[in-house]
Image (cartoon, one colour):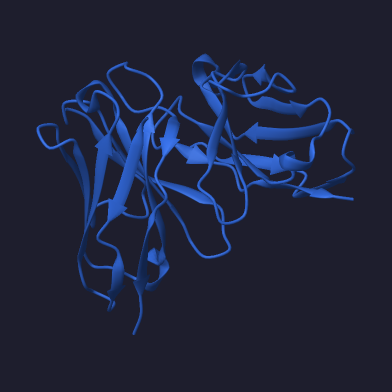
Length: 122
Length: 108
């Protein structure tokens, strides 16, 4: 069974940093691109970042570009999101998601984790 | 960035009725690279449709997707009680990937 388990969320002050992790199991992790998607309380989905299977291609939403960094460790079947200069508007539930294709990119989200909550407060 | 606009914002229907949800893109979505997701309250989203019209594994055939270019549609042929939820479209034809704002399908 494919499983994605996020961790690392928490409370942080504006300007602070957090590192989210996503542990993957039940599939060949290094065959797939991966995504981070977030959802602010009571709001819709926002794509945050994607990375292809070998980290050769990464992309970010304009809202996080320059502040967030996506990475992966295929040896550990893990995905990460390093977040810096956090703002109140980054408060959200952050989902890790497995891409639906084995093409050399990140397209759509076939499997989702349950998410980890990030709260930026002052 | 491609902006996706979903309509209507809320759809009030009864079980057994047909639901038609629209997703309009600010520019053409290449290769029909559009997906649809369902999200129930308190749950993670679930993939329904990819490539505009291909059903994901395990998705009932009452869900169907169509469209190309800038206009896409998700149709639920006969609403079941478990289909009342929020639906999102997402394009992956260009970077950055983007979602629509969602359509809520509620019980009338």
